[in-house]
Length: 394
Image (cartoon, rainbow, N blue to C red; front, side):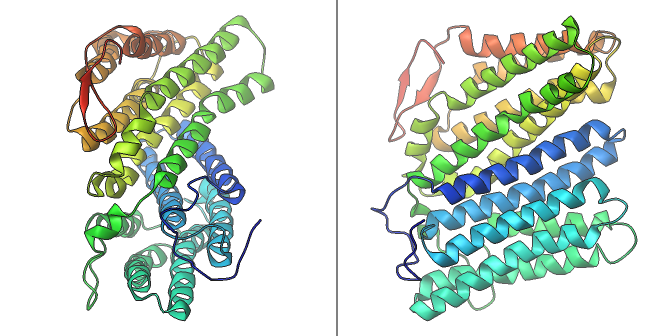
């Protein structure tokens, strides 16, 4: 691990865009937290319970996203940034440990892990950049510190009773999301200048790609654990095979021209860089829901399919595709209607799917994903530089 003190903390545009080994370890820790979130989804039997799990998922994702953005603007080979990555890893472990018990106890552990990670990151940056005399970067970090202090008040207040105050936590995560979208407007400092969002390299795109690919592995990991712990029969193995096929199909949907989209995004006024956390939140919610659905399908491949299971089995892949479509739309202003149309086909069987076995419903969704990929079409696709072309595949 190369470290050279605090010198040149701000990343050079001509520097390497490769992720460091510490960043990859950071990703693995967060993917483990996502897997636990999927398991929690399978245990929730109410819509409000599902909404609470999704709120915690948003907090976990927001921690990863902002930390990844930190390594885009600041050199991850420097000691302060390495310290930030390590603190974020510890914070993700704290959030993961608190997740199963968050409605009973461990409230402060979850909140301290989340709020503490963001505040400590900002404090380290402000202090290091002040020593270097880097005024512009210091002001950027100060804006982040201000808004995470504001939302932190609501996070902590919501954890001071015996049960979490989900209303206050909803306000807190909303502040975090809206402040970022508004470019952190701060008294006396104003908003983060839009020009700073244009200063991105291929590193950020690579980080998003790596995390999504790792997260997709949860779709196979969770049902594999179910199969290994229970009776080995043909239906459970078939369900595991369906999970593997679905994972590969979603990978193909995400990976198709992903590098070109991200390369084009680098020169597109910073809009995709600012909005990628939101589009990828939709996408990763789809991954978590899909992983949860296959854990259920492997557990009970036969019988009828409850409405909650239908939402996970059909809605998970649909959310993944929606997140991918939204990101492509931000770059090219082109809606790939074929992607959307194929994901609507499982909805056609929704009136009858409740009476079908869960494995059959999952197979129908996999067929829709396969049609999405393998049926030829002449969609416009994005090239670097935001050009468009006609293609016979898509």
